Image (cartoon, rainbow, N blue to C red; front, top):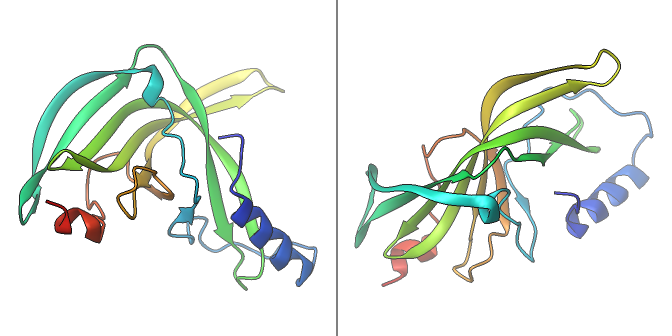
Length: 176
């Protein structure tokens, strides 16, 4: 994700202009629950992936239909940069960073053939150019939601790299 949402950049510039230039401490690096990009986020690795399997998630049952999850895996190693946003303790400064990860799996979540979310499972990738060392870290997730049923995934939320505790938008249960 090389392009950052204009709204976030505007918010960053507005908040920075009204506060000190020295960053305040961050107590929780994931204290921003979601980031909205009105034009929608691209799902990292989806175009380079193939379908592995389709299954039903028993805990995800809704009135009118069960949640179906289709698993995808990239055809080859695919490393992406995922945006990380956080607020300072005084909540006046927005920090934007990148977290690098190898796309391991992608989960497409749908009810009645209407896709409402993608969960991208990533394995953290490290590279120290000074020491020429690389390695892998923890598994983490990037969740992308279609908030209104328009087919655009405008909401990005950091989370677990598994289909767990999905936030099912209201339009999904109302759709027939």
